[in-house]
Length: 143
Image (cartoon, rainbow, N blue to C red; front, side, top):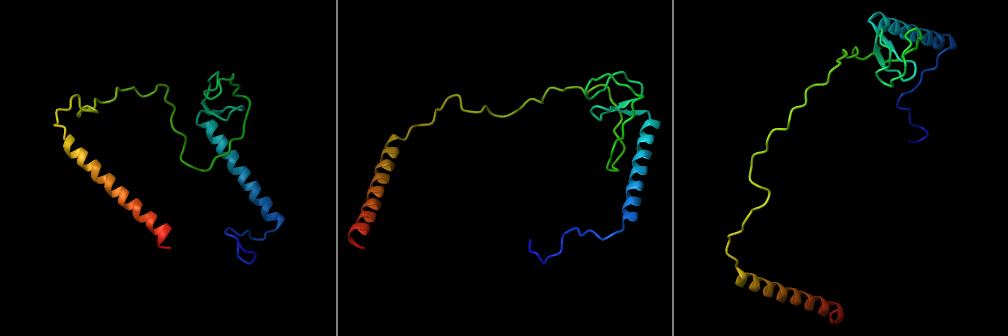
């Protein structure tokens, strides 16, 4: 990025009073969110930040003894509300059976064309030697 280009997210100059007002507003919003969590019957663990139902004795996240009297400030990004708690996992189903041919043939009954294979090998060798001779002639005699 060059010296004379404008920044992608420029900061506008503001007074200290405006910055203090923004900080107070943000703190008030976060405090009201935390109060909303407590009113909804959700407590936040002070050691790991996991949300727990109100009245549980141990944290679901870290397993530490849970003291609901100890308050903790939680910061969120104003997303959707937290998912409801489900104590049981969904049932495990076996994978569906796979239908199809086996991965490799069990027996190969195809006729073997050894004569064709020998002629193809000889022809490939002759073409390779011809190409090598042309390269040698070019590099040693024609340059």
